[in-house]
Image (cartoon, rainbow over all chains, first blue to last red; front, top):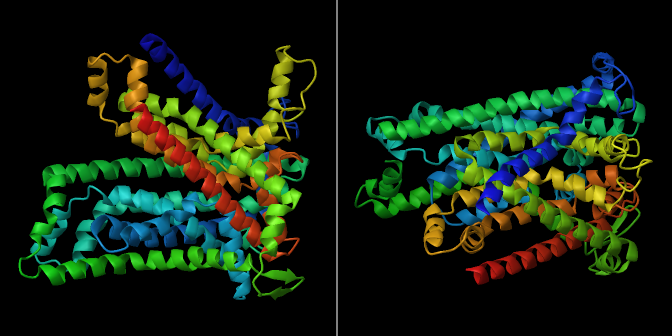
Length: 269
Length: 305
């Protein structure tokens, strides 16, 4: 039994990872295929689908919109995430569990219901749909991820270092700037990257709340109706894949460095 | 050292000022969390309250009649079209959460018990696919399962089938396969976390007392990892029921789910009260279903021990 398990479990693990990567692999493959129809056998190698991308004004606009929305949402969600994560890891206060539950709730709610409820409220109070309303929606769904990443960074954080700083005469602001911030900086950057990546890929909120301005996923959704546009969309998807991969690798490396730094400091203290 | 410092922190409070300090600690915590909490209250709790309110109203073209009525719920639960969409959505989310959890458990187990020093790398590898464009991942499944798709041409190339199968795409199973893929990481991570917490000495003890590997797994490891299984089910089942993109792209006519009906009421159909009632019914029913399943799993877990 044990022998079967130890032989089959790794095989299953590799198969499963193969299943996870299966759809991802076809993006780059068909994005350099000459044929506009994504099927095997491949016709020939081309970069024309990539060359077309910068010549599509609607795509450039959408990319720019996504960038603006992503940066704004990442900043807001990280600032709000810092407040929540700091409060949750550092303080005990009444209603702590309830507050945590409300803040994390978007993680376990169907996104379409969040989107339509925001849509009703925004239209009812006469707020015009724009990229700003998309940001509001994106911040809501990014906060749980920011809080999770930041909680991990703030936990295990040695409070005695802050106390030492206070004992040595630093003001609480000074302590935060000179002791706390450097310790948690990697978690903050990690939260910025993760929430930017989520916002960049988020479709439903943008679909309902964007009004006439399109973000990248909304643009892609529009293109998916036209079979002939598919290779360009796959090329765009490949670029996004590479971009997200780089951002997330940075986030992961920073997270590990933060982990080591927090543990290192604890050992030294 | 860390735990020591954390544990002894309250003792650092100057004696004699204990009560005001405690109050100010609480006040500081509340003050600090209030911006985030206010954001969630204004943009999550209030809008959902508005949706609930709308579900009891009626709309005639552009005028909303705010007198209380259960008419929308009668339509949402009684009309066969909405009832069928709701039942299919529940069935799909049930299947998806079952398959994701069953497929994810061995992986989480493998990483936790046999991952060694490469645990971090494995987790990173598993999360990467989930950061690629969601729309394009679903689109990619369409390419794989389609009539001229990768799977059909592969099966024909191997001589397993003579002509392309149309049974792969545009039905409920295509939706289930795609969603099972989409939510995999969300099931692996919570299960992994709870497996990490399983005290390894308990398994040794079970083995020493004569339990074979299967018995010790069923009586120790599995029951102790149930919290992770439960959170995986919740995290997959509830959002899946309202998925919009997957049924639209790979579901075809037979794979339409409730989200399409909700969207129609808010965009083209412009019947907000009905859309609101459909949303509330979906949320309530999926929550009840999830709660029932969690209850059953907890009971089974108690019996196993």
